[in-house]
Amino acid sequence: MLDIKDLHVKVGDKEVLHDINLHIGEGETHVLLGPNGSGKTTLLMTIMGYSQYTITEGKIVFKGEDVTNMKAHERAKRGIGMLFQRPPTISGLKLGKLLSAISRTKTENIPELAKSLHMDKFLERDINKGFSGGEIKRSEVLQLTMQNPDFIMLDEPESGVDIENISLIGNAIGSLLEKDKHIIKRQKSGLIITHTGYILDYLETDRGHVMCDGQIKCHGNPREILKDIKQHGYKECLECRNP
Amino acid sequence: MPQPVNVTEISKTDRERLAQTGIDLEMKNRCGSYLQMDQDVVHAECAEEGIEVLSYKKAMEKYDGLKEYAWKVVSPEKDEVTKYVAAQKDPKGYVIIAHKGSNNIFPIQACLFLGREQIQHVHNIIIAEEGAELHIISGCASGEHVGTGGMHYGVSEFYVKKNAKISFTMIHNWSENIEVYPRSASIVEENGVFLSNYVCMQPVKKVQMYPTATLKGENSVARFSSVVIATPGSYMDLGSRAILEGAGASAELITRAITKGGTIMSRGHINGKTAGTRGHLECKGLILKDGIIYAVPEIEGSVVGTELSHEAAVGKLAREEIEYLMARGLDEDEATATIIRGFLDVKISGLPEALQQQIDASIDEAEKSGF
Image (cartoon, rainbow over all chains, first blue to last red; front, side, top):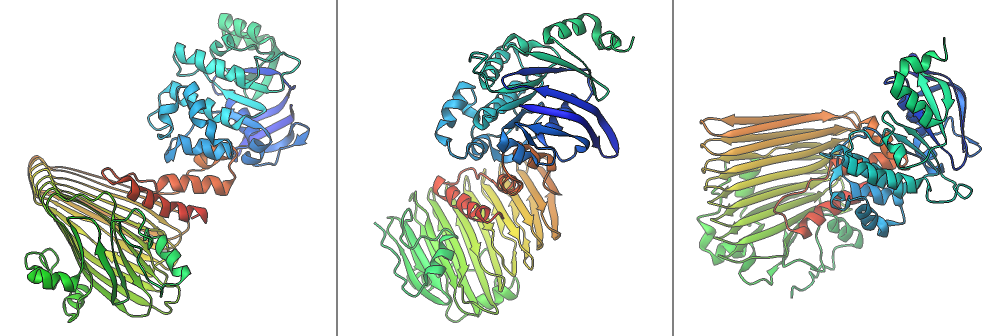
């Protein structure tokens, strides 16, 4: 599904990601762990195609196609989608209108889908204006559901969300990633940034990666890595790589 | 049932130009009409009981010169425009009277069409008597054949009596050769509501106006909303003023201005003269191409107990917002147009749905061409 090869990324004059290599197969969901400021969100934004992240070396291959130089909308059309941690507020733009623009044809499903995420009362509200943490995430999941991407990146889907909403959001993300399908038939892939790991209670993941200082330092079973980090913190976790 | 307005001399193209200003010559969802082409009053009628739509001339004859109303809130000596209109021996324009207790659900449309090069002049008087509710959509357009120039001088006087309400929605569709000088003022009595909306998405050479509402009555309300785009060569000098005299009177002045190379002067003035009055003035501007947005918000309070505020901001489209929508699959142009459409989205409290839809439709029309 996604192949990142020898990727170097600059923001302004400063290199922030160094030599990233990552492979995510079809039907797989990976977890990206790492301390604040380690470059996790930068990696997701780079994969999405945000223009402030300049790829200086390496490439991003999605479903066999080199998307390194494509703009965000071209990547979105090919099936890359993202749940943003802090999406912008857009004054005057109604959530319902954006959903119609995203869906292009399937407008009749919008009220029903919105209801399933308890967002039916938000369709006439300006996007993210005065939304609580949980409402922002539900709005993001709703937009992604409309978009129906093949590869879904989730930037801290549980941050600022209460227990009740985590279950709602976790289950919705699970069905977006086809977790209800048999592993053989599953075609959707994902990459999740999490600090707490709460989201992992609602969906199984296949592999974990730890980022530090703009590099992926180690890989492994996501639950084991998370357990280690919870017990010993990132400092000790990463020391195992540089004893 | 209102009859269609029969105007064979308006070409199909010009009908479409008028339709963009909310004028429906088929009279669907309209309760009455006034149509003036150049200086000819083509049509003036209203099917609704209790509401009269008359030409200025007829109204003067019928109501003995409308002495209480004509030139009472706008002074004929105010400037060159009012002097010109006042000096006319054969004055044009319309008088709309919503008699006591009348209530129209559908708006009356007033259409001022400029087909030749000249000065079109009108003097309008709009009265909502006690408890009446009156909605007017004023569509102003010039024909496709108006060549090197034309001018529109319009004087409008509004009287909102006790417990009455007037909404006046003006949509302009002039052309780059036309200069427009509306001069209007209103008096709002106890519990009266005056809503004034202005939309201009199309090129115009010059618009200059500064409508004033004097809120004389207790708890009277005025809301001015303007949504405008200035294209290269357009000069829009737009203001609005509310004078808060009655206890509990309140006013809101909202502007959304976009320049694509033209000039917009966005003025506003709220004068709080009485305790217990409130006013808010808001101007948001977006510069898409080098041009000028010059916001001059003024608030003036002279007594303890008046509360006035203003906010003004001029800026650019946020890259973060554009890319957010691109990440959802919209290309850059679609994302930009969607954000601009949102910026221009002003929902006017108290305006009938049909009129809000008309305002939305005229902005949507501009969105189709990517603004």
